[in-house]
Length: 287
Image (cartoon, rainbow, N blue to C red; front, side, top):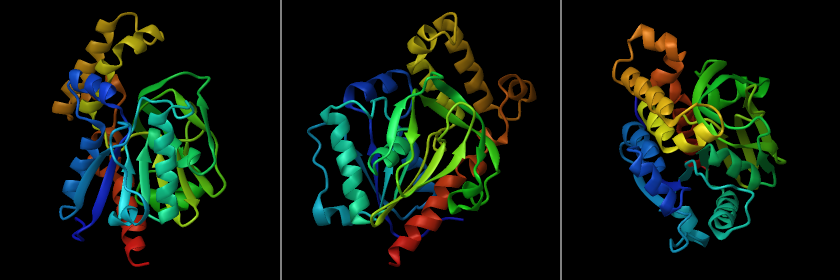
C-alpha cells in the first residue's frame, strides 16, 4: 500500500558539510537520502526537497513560505544541541517556526532532541555513554501503546542507534512514548502551539548496511571510548553486518549479532514512518 496524495515534504539534513564528507568517505548514504528512499516508495507522488540547514549559507523558508510544505522531517546530526553556535541555534529557531506554522514534524536521533529543545525541554550528555549500532529492548510506555505512532508495532523491539546525548526533560506538551535501559527517552510526541512533532531517538530509516558504514565512520571514537580493542575489530563487525544485510536468512549471523526481524524487516522497522504519514501528516491536510 502507498499514499497517492501529492505531498510536499522537506527533509532537513542536520549535518554540516564537513561532517557529511566524513559519512561519504565511509561509503554510506547521506542522512536525508535514507528518508528520501522511504518517501519515494511510500509516497511516490510527493515532492521532496532537502534542506542543508547546518550550512550557514543555506537560505531557510520563513513566514508564509513555511506553509509551502505539508510536513518536515529531521535527520540525525553529529552536532551537539546544547552548544551555543549558529549551526545549532538556527536549527532550533527553525523548528520553533515550524511548530508555530502548525506543520507536522518527524525526526530521529537529533530529531527527538530537536523536538524537545525547540519546545522548551532539555538535552544533556548521557552519563551511561554512547549507545551505538542497536538500541536493545526498547519498550513502549502505556501512552506509547495507545499512540498512533506505534500502531501495528511490537510493544518491545530493537532499533538502529548512534548517540551520546539524551533528552533529560520532556517539554510541556510532550508525551513519553518509548524507553529502554540505556536511554530514558527513546520516543516522544510533542504538541507545541499549533504544531506536532513525533520523534524517536533510534533510527527507523536506517538499514543494516548503512549502520555498518556508520560504524566505519565512527570507528575511531568507538575504539577510543573502549567498545573495541582496535579499529580493525570495528571493521570486522561492520563486515559481518553487511554480510547479513546481503543474506538476511543466515541463521548463524542472526544469532551471533542478536538480530531479528525487527531490525531486518522494513515492514516492522519503518512502521513509525508510515504511521506518521498516515496519522499526522494526512489528517493535518484536512484542517
